[in-house]
Length: 425
Image 1 (cartoon, rainbow, N blue to C red):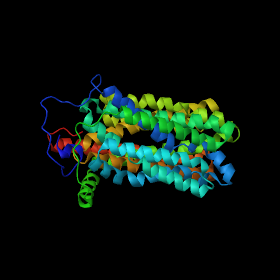
Image 2 (cartoon, rainbow, N blue to C red):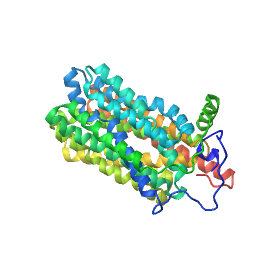
Image 3 (cartoon, one colour):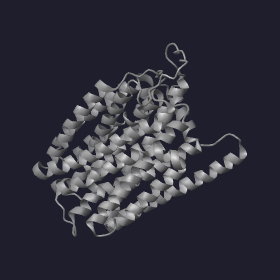
Image 4 (tube, rainbow, N blue to C red):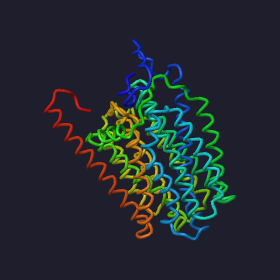
């Protein structure tokens, strides 16, 4: 495979011969299950660590005597660190390999994770969380680039969906476990348990992930990287996909940062363990992400994005009611819509970028986690000012942005189709 197809700009060493038969992995083929499970575990570890403090924010607020908007920085710092470092880490993966960078990233992240429980102040906790997010930046873009190189194109959406499903399982299990552990032993013990679980996932990931067969090392020259990034940002379709990822994550980050505060207050007044169990609705995200490929096959990419946005908006509106069952239903719809939209948009980036795939994925992940940081912070500020309705308002504005961008993309595709006989995706 050529450097262009791997995202590399300058090959190092001899170029491998092109096989007559596609040797990339496919469902049922050699190594596919190991690869899928390894990246699933990487997704579990990434989201469990990245959002390990989210369900614990009321307890952190209580210990340090701070408001929700201040405690939310323990989430925003981690996602912000990931957003800032995902592009540089993707460049390292072009030179040193996807598996090497993913392994190193997990190793550093789990080490920092074992230090988090001993943070003496909110400031130190925020710094550690920022470092943890920066370390985790080596996972998302490298994983999607690895899949784009090692998996056959027809299986790519499904393979990425499984990785995203691992994210949902990690997010769910991390929050459920921390909720119940924190109720018995406090938030520090809870994040410590997550750190140990992440260590186990990291070890299993490294043992299971097959060595790459289609990676060609590339250059680390800043000028080459800058040109690749500029080319991606000049592509209208990629820009739309980046914005869609950021907006979906703005909704998700805001909702799940604030929901714990809402459920500890009247009329719900729920204990911490039960609040942690609320995150079992992430299982819905596991299903919606893993089935996103079939949804795209039936209604197309833009149709899937409309459905995902509509489902998320419906969930936001349903969650406004003071009934706990309806709040839970709202969270189910928000989660299903978000993970479906994320899986569709992220896989579309990998298909659209024919060169510099790692950088294309990195830009998507950067936008995605900027959306998470913005959602966590703005959602918490809106909650402090206007209650849950304020957080919902922020989410609805973000979904309106998703729908607007998708409509513009549909119109642009129709215009391009009339001008060219070549099908536009």
